[in-house]
Amino acid sequence: MNKDFILIENPRLRVVEDLRIRNKDNMKNVAGEYFGNKFTYAETFQMFEDFKKAFIHVDGLEESAITISAPSTIASVNAFYGAIDANKIANMVGPGFLQAYTEKYTTGVNSQTAIIFDGFLSDDLVSKLRQAGVKNLIVTSVTDYMNPVVKLAGQAKGLIDKKDFLDEYVKAHKTLPQGMEIMRLKEFAALGKKVKEPYGFPYEEGKIAAHFLTGGTTSQIPKCVKLYADGLTKMACIYDKLWFDFEYGDRNTVFIPLFYATGAVHGVHAGLFKGATLIYKPKYDRFSFGKDLIDSKAKVALVAPSHVATLDESGLADNSLRHVKYIFIGGEAIMPAQIEKFRNTAKRLGVKHIINAYGMTETGSMTGLSDPHYNTLDDVSITPVPGVQYRIVDPDSGEVLPDNKRGILEMYSPCTMAGYMEEEKNKTLFTSDGWVHTGDIAIRYSNGKYRVFGRATDCFTNNGKIYPMYDIEEQVLTHPAVAEAEVIKFNIDKEERPAIVVVLKSEWQDRAANVLRRLSTIDVPGMEYLLGVRFVDKFKTNPITAKRDVLSLPDETTDYYRLDKESDTIFRVTIGGEQTAVTDSNVTVVNV
Image: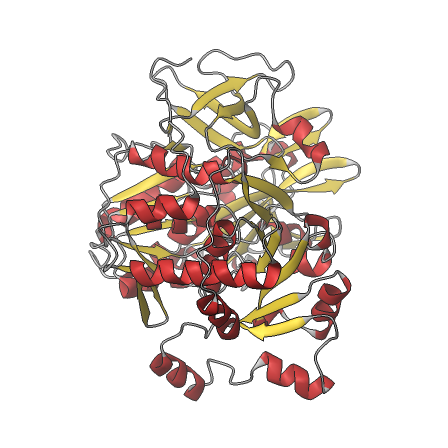
């Protein structure tokens, strides 16, 4: 065992009980702000209790799953903690996955009760839920818990739909489906207030708290991750031992869809156990990130790197974010040139610390963090948090590698998930000695720090040789014109070849040909197979996760450019099709 390893004791407390104990002197402070409404910790725990009792009232005392597909509303927070405290399993599923796999993710996990955001509901989904045996359908709206004045103003401006889903549904069908009770969230919460029985459940070792049917922008098929309740209470213990200097009332803006994936646990659960005031931003896009930070007066934010990338072009004045102390970046590997740009931007805007955070959905918490007092701007290295161990292994033999050699990162964490719903997937996730095989390429340096480069699958194969795409991307990001970049691959004549999609900074968009020439000189193995470079003004955004929608990039096959070095001729290329010689002025940026 690593001599620096810190054992994380199991607090042996139920999740909501742990939160109550941690906030026993904090009940009068504001726990959450949502569209102009503020909720104290006392009110928040009362909402958890009301939801808990309401779930027991409609779903019974037996352990079952509560399907929750309401990532745009604060109701998902109440439903998450209410379900766990009712001895249920919070079955968190994105709307697309629920629509596509309704029976699998309701009947298949023993769920007869569902909370659904009305923006996702349709005749088709209601019919699927009823056929899958869902008996209780609770309908929530983005306007639930909204300040009445804010709601009225939003309706007057046409920003909020005045229509009520249930009223419209009954109007269209003259009746509600037989065998299914549909109710509004307000009616559901009122049921809990009527229940006087003081239900309590004992602590259980190894209790499953939640399923996270996640994938977002990294997977076409959802990963059903099963998270232990112990993982949440142990996560709190891990963060207790870190250098965080959070205090009661610190403003933590939640920019990620509420409990859509385990990343939201960091944004919501970590904030609640530290007594923070959580400012929920359920309807947002990454291009409003800077304005949201200003409006919310946030001290802390946890976001994807693509959000931070927007700050430089947001028109923000110097020191306008001086109230922000920590921005934690997670979800994607960070390149040195990226972090240097981010930290230079942060310095100009007054942000105290940009922290590179690493953690997987499968590990239930951030497992590694960069030093807040970094010595160089481009240092992306991380150190395992207390209670977590890393090792680098050979991808073929599984043998632990010495320092300064790339391999697969494996980790041991007290918060590790119970496994996937599909048992077959667990065979490649866990090692024989209980470590998690992350599938990420990383290195351990001689100073004991680690760097994660990217997924082992982020490679292309040509003539039997494997080339990492993240090595190309790292060099692309060093160009001062490049705000964001993604290297993708296409299969051409039975061989894989890379292409580059680049977001150009606005002041460089009339000099795209110059950038192309510079990028064409990158000397990285595999660049000789480059198909072309596509310049765009921004990346499309996933409507649920608000992250870059990288999965859609290979769908666009036109408007790539390739430089023939010998003749210094630029060709406009259609992937797998024709190419035409063009002048420098014809190298243009695509408006996405």
